[in-house]
Image (cartoon, rainbow, N blue to C red; front, side):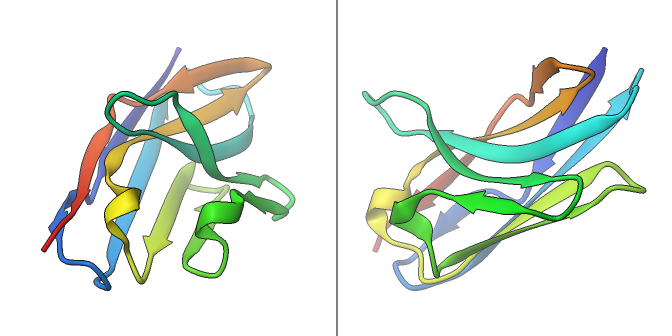
Length: 115
């Protein structure tokens, strides 16, 4: 089983930046995809960004141009650089990984954007 540990959340003002990081450990076969979802209070969980192990990325329209996902296949880590944060980015951010067809999730890290 894959364990995921996120870090980097916090409280920031609109326009500020944060960087989220996630590291996978445990019984890893071969992780093919890592990424981030988020869930705001009262809303469904939604995809933020993902990166495939060949480097291809996908972003939600709402964060394009502001967030950048990066990954390190050798270390099984993924990061999300979030710039120009908006109040609507406030949510719990969850890291996930696809390993051998199985999806694992982190515990989540809170990001709050407020003045």
